[in-house]
Image (tube, rainbow, N blue to C red; front, side, top):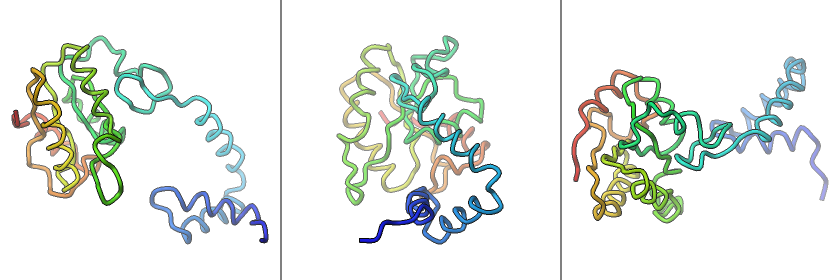
Length: 199
């Protein structure tokens, strides 16, 4: 079997990135090898640095350059309130509103039998450990109101039902099937402020 050349291998890798298919990956690789050649070494260096310095926060589960991450180690954050979100992108969007002053917990996805994501593959047990050790009073479910988000919410409510915490969810002003990360700041602010108790 003929070995792939560097361009083919680069296209193969880049086409695995979100938002890239084979055509867009090919365009990017050819641009980097031609017009973008001046930034190619810098890009490789930055990606190598990213690989060497990136960590996972042992508290919230977000990607960070320190452990615990700056937010989890910030004493001014309210440790009695935890907002559960799908991933770090959702956390960053919520943080931009400036309205939420508690802490976060990254689930690492949503329940999706179609994709083989079952509840045991999410960071639910880690959340339970935090509830036990951090004196948590409220869990805010900050998941997208998609079918997968609602299924995950139901699992969370069931798993947390035996713990003495108030469980709320973001208000339903959010468009159905819209991911948290794509909502505008005003919609998110209202969803947080007008959150509803579910248990």
